Structures are given as C-alpha cells and as structure tokens.
Image 1 (tube, helix red, strand yellow):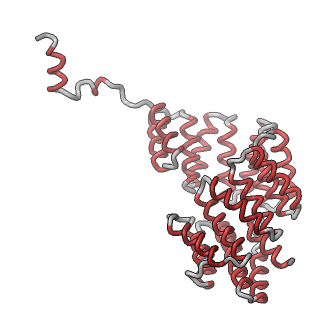
Image 2: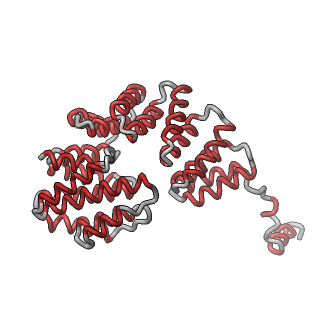
Image 3: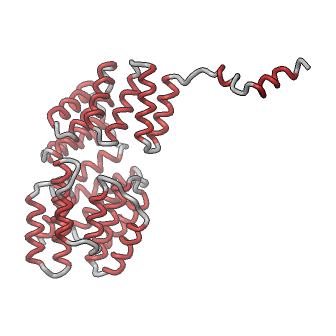
Length: 352
C-alpha cells in the first residue's frame, strides 16, 4: 500500500511534479531565440531574446542577436538601438560594430557606418570581414578603387573565404576589368562549389560579354544552390534573358512561368515579381515603371528605377524598337546606380 501512495499522488495531482521544475532561464530563452533565428523566424526570435533580456539586463549576446533579427526585418532603427546596448556592455564587441555599421549603411548614414567599420579594423587589423564591409560601403559610395583596395585586404587576410573574391570581382566588373572579375569568380567557385554567388557573378560577366550559353549554364547552377528567394528569383529572370537573347522565347516563358507558379513572395520582393510579369507580358510598360517608384526607401526606389528602365529597354530591343530601347538604356544609366547589374548591362547594350 505504501508503494501505491506516490502513484496515487501523481494520478490525483498530475501537476505536482511540473511545479518542481525550475522556470526557464535567460540562457534557455536565448538558446531558443537562436534556434528560431536560424530557421528564419525573426519575430519569434525577437520575442525570445527579449525574454532573455528581461531576466538578464546585461545579456550582451542577446542584445546583439536581437539587433540582427531586427535588421533582418528591416527595422534598422531598432537594430541600431540593440547594437548600441551590446557595445555599451562590451566596447570591443567586433560583430556588434559590424552589425551597427550595416544598419547605418541601410539607413544611408554612410559616415556613421564608415566610423563603425574603421573601429573594427582599428581593433582587429587583420579581420577580413571588416574590410569586406568597408569595401561594400565604398562601392555604394561609388569609390570603386577604394573598394577594390579593401577587398584586396580581405583576400589577403582571409584567402579561404570566397566572399572576398566575389565582392572584389563585383567591383572589378563595374570597373570593366572583366578578366580580373572572371578570375575572382573562378577562384570563389573553387573555394566553395556550393556557393551560388560565384556562379551567379560569373554568369553576369558572361551576359555582359554576350556569352549567353555560358551564362545559361552558370545561372542553372546558381538557381540550384541559391539559399534565398531573392538570388533565386533574379537568377530565373536572367535565365529568361539568356534564352530570349537566343530566340528561344517559348522556352524562356515556360521556365519563368513555372517558377512563378511555384513561388510565393512578400514585400519587398514583390518588385521582382513585377519584373517577371512584365517580361512575360502579363503587365505593361507603364505598370512596370510606376511600380518602380514604390519602394520601402529612397535607395530602393532608385535601384528599382534603374532596373525598370533596363528591362523596358530590353523588351523594346527584342521587339525591334532599337531607338526607344537606346533611350531607355540611357535613362537606366542616368540613375547612376553603378552597383546594379542592370546599370552594367545597359552600358553594354549601348556599346554594342
């Protein structure tokens, strides 16, 4: 009978044992937040990191990762506030400076971003990622030579990190140093055959040089390896372009249509869908150019305008209206969005 007493207690009071379990700790919430962040649930991650911070006001890593999650949701102001708290707790926290610099750059606070990237380099002069971040900022500010210098440092200090080669290739591509760009993309692919960036970048160089067969092969590989919808979507649009340039219009339409039917996008990715629908003739030129003016920021609108004029020009040229196409390519170039692939392609169009 004595042995039955504990069992009866469990039956009659099933929550008795659960009451003995300690409540979740700050570390528990933090670990759960990391798991949500890793699978792309940024809202859930923010809630969990906040729970961790409520239990430990000095939880530096939680502030940092909550900042990253907010930045992933384009809440750059909120992200900067969290990075500030992380840096306040740990003044030598390199990644917090890089995160804050990236958020400032997204808000067009270029001087503030540069100060953060410079701070990281002063604290760790051989940190390759810091040079990549500063190089990217210089590229946005159209200092392409300065960007290449930073990417050179990134490659020197982190020769096994393919992103340095990819970024340097992109800057050299804009400088029309296509041989150097191609060599860097080749090296990036050798370093990591599973990174879509190397294949995608190499495809763009081939597109600029009208090597449509070669671009087609690389774009297929980029699509197969892409980790984000954005990369995959643009690669499909460029794939359409390679086929259309070869007169394979039905195949081009079929491939892009099949992709659209099996993909769901949300803001701000709907702009990419507008481009796809335009080249598939599901919407008209006026709708495309009007949509280009609708964006989450002035920076986004300028980029979309560049893309809109290019694709409008491309469709005009494919239809035989070379005069109007040239006018649209010139308008694309006039946006001065030198970091955009379409800017480079528009220049190539006018030079042919």
